[in-house]
Image (cartoon, rainbow, N blue to C red; front, side, top):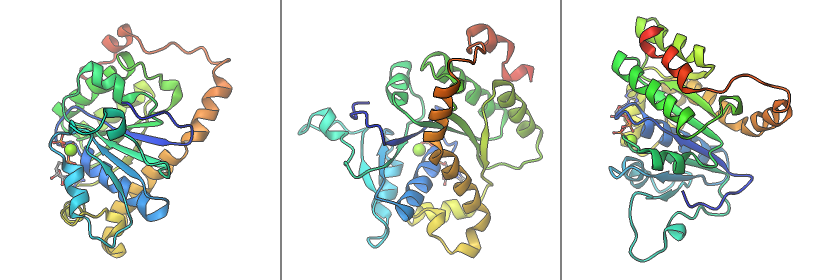
Length: 255
Ligand SMILES: Nc1ncnc2c1ncn2[C@@H]1O[C@H](COP(=O)(O)OP(=O)(O)OP(=O)(O)O)[C@@H](O)[C@H]1O
Ligand SMILES: [Mg+2]
């Protein structure tokens, strides 16, 4: 990614190469919430399907402003760095990524991210794919778990299923938090159709879903504290880093 690094920029990457796990749903709901509460956020869409950009186009004209950057497009008329330029007033940048990201793009996308959210559906196949995604983040993108940048959002979940319990145990063994559990809810579908986030729907209808979105925002907004904590413990903590051996011991099949 060619965005110039900025110290005060909250760069939230939504990532999971598995299709349909809720990346765009999460990206649009976070952008809508940031738009409601602060200066206009920027949403960057790296997915050639352009779901987040299409959502932005459906957004009613009187809704709080969100800047959109269609990062998947190759502009003939602008340099890449100009195309990906984040407006200076932006404090919160939300990045929607495509299904299937190669190692090079993974390194580029994760560079300078303050938080990385992995939405996961609670099926055996999705959990397996998510464990590979997390392994790639740790081993290829070299995300250090001690930075506490990485979190999972369980999506379309029925909490008391076996697969959910499996997912919880797996993540627990890696020390990665599940910061929110989104239920399977038509509120997300209806909001998406209208170019809105659930925070912009009738409050009494979306209470449960909005609570979960707000939990995510609360965790995201604590990124300066997480960074600060990391800096203060980095000299004392000597826990082993995640390595290939650990990955073999901790595959989902073994949890
Ligand atoms: N919690 C939810 N409840 C109900 N429907 C949901 C929920 N989350 C996502 N969906 C629906 O599931 C479908 C896939 O979600 P979404 O497009 O967000 O996934 P994605 O990871 O961005 O997919 P892709 O990899 O194709 O970009 C959409 O139709 C969306 O409205
Ligand atoms: Mg998408």
